[in-house]
Length: 161
Image (tube, rainbow, N blue to C red):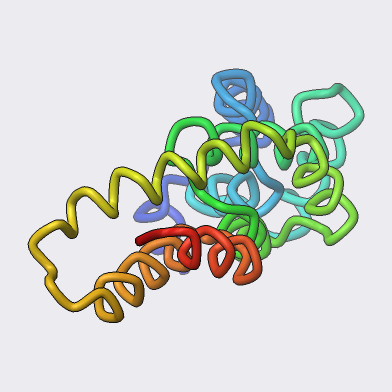
């Protein structure tokens, strides 16, 4: 048991608090990421939960703020659609309330413009495909894989000739 503690690199609660504050100050983190980091530092569940509560109280950890920043970044930088962003937030165990709030922050006009831009670029890349049906199917699959809603994708693909 004792050698296991040494292998895990057990730190004191004060050391862990300093490390985790720095970790949270560097960029927004989900509760799941913070708990994982605390476990990596060698803390047990009760200790980790106490530190998470303290981080929330002190403003280092905010699930809503994390969700909004995550969604905005994934849309702007990676050009993900709302479905893919929602799935990624669910994997990070973010509450459905925060997910809805984060997705609502994405403006509809830039969202549709990004979808159109992605469709146009991909359509051009598929210029070698002679069969129009296969070409449209590949475009649709690509846009759905990026996480855009089926109705929007269907409308975008049907407008291509």
